[in-house]
Image 1 (spheres, rainbow, N blue to C red):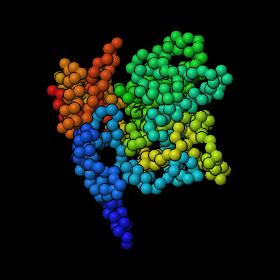
Image 2 (cartoon, helix red, strand yellow):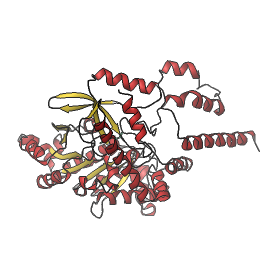
Image 3 (spheres, rainbow, N blue to C red):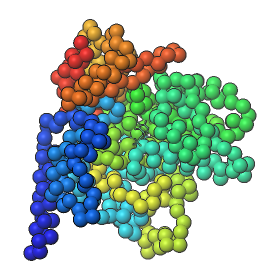
Image 4 (cartoon, protein in one colour):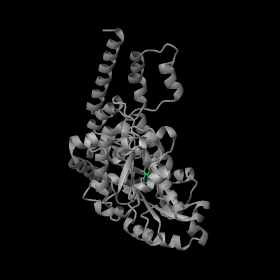
Amino acid sequence: MHKIDIDLIEMTMDVMKYVIDRLSSTKNKIGKPKKEEELKALVGETITKKGIGGEQAFKLWKKYLTKSNVPIDHPRHLAFVPASPTRAAVMFDLVTSASSIHGAYWMEGAGGIFCENEAMRWIVSLTGMPEGAFGVFTSGGTAANLSAIVTAREYWRSLKEQNKEEKGLIITSIGAHSSIKAMAKVADIDVLLVDTEDRLEADALRITINNLTPHQKQRLFAIVATGGTTNAGIVDDLEGIASICEKENLWFHIDAAYGGGALVADSVRHLFKGIEKADSITIDPHKWMFSPYDCGAVIYKKPELAKQAHSQEGSYLDIFKDEGAHGFNPSDYQIQLTRRVRGLPLWFSLATHGTNRYKQAVERGIALAQIAGKIISDMPHVELVREPSLSCVLYRRIGWLPDDYKHWTYENHEKGFALVTPTKWKIGDTFETVSRFCFINPDTTEKDIKMILNSMV
Ligand SMILES: *Cc1c(COP(=O)(O)O)cnc(C)c1O
């Protein structure tokens, strides 16, 4: 055996050992952030003409670099929207990489795309969208939102010659995720915000539409509702908004990047009534469907409209569209050409565990939010800002100013104890700084919650 082969085998064993340790460990620390200069001083030059060798690079990774990351699945990581990929999904992420699959076209990636589509069929079934609705996996919610908005805009432009000259306009609320505004910028679309961070109600939307100038009205082509706001877990009035979209002939996009996972949970499914009427939906399996990063999804009621907007033309691409290569080409339905079959780890995990386990795990996140709400109500030094919604809890430490929240966050992070970050909540015309939990990891315990709250005394 050549030396290189022995090295490769050793490296493989090392990597597998690391992966197994990481997956079976229940006591990971929350990593501590370090400045770039500090990291550089610890690891020195790693990119050199001759290479420092895999063994050395891996050693540096284990000894210094990995400790500067926050494991997103830590049970006391309750900031932003955490994640908690299943072990099965993580293991199959390795298989996905090792299999070197080009996930753009069926011709090359049939086996992988078949699996993605099986997982996608389950996700679509959760939405209750009509026969023919289907979707593709994307790099995340941002890419899914962009793909959907561009599809909607191109469809609108195809309806009337006059629309081709116009800059499109969409309406959403201030509870919408920042990526909606960011992606509207990318697509050169104007955004009008209904001034509420609470549930976007049909009435408020109707008033906003009625107040548009005739020209704005002509440019308006889509409404974006949120199925679980990132900040507070609020689901907009999807049913009411759907009726308005139908009446006004507007595209109805629902951004359920975070909340979409809750469609599987019987206890909250009723909140999403009306989601089946959407023209497009964003759901992030890397948030509440326990997939490793990165994995988003966009679903269309009429996928052929997405194809009209996104299918790329090029002489070297023609072969993929031939009869001989016939099959589902994920690249036709979103912004990316070459793509990882990023739905593959989700497929393996779903196949391994069954969908009931997903239901249980999501219900646990919702239950944890309720449990936290109860504990907060019982403690004298903290109080709820609003009732928990989905798996989000907004609460205040009575008497604290914004800087107190900030220092508390940094201190807990520095100790490797927890990552819980402040947010702002709009009350009347003012934004109050408050604390926020978002539960995803079903292994978070009541004790974790109490420990965190006690550290605020
Ligand atoms: C997280 C989130 C996004 C952005 O998704 P990425 O996967 O981070 O690109 C969009 N919308 C909502 C509601 C989100 O919670």
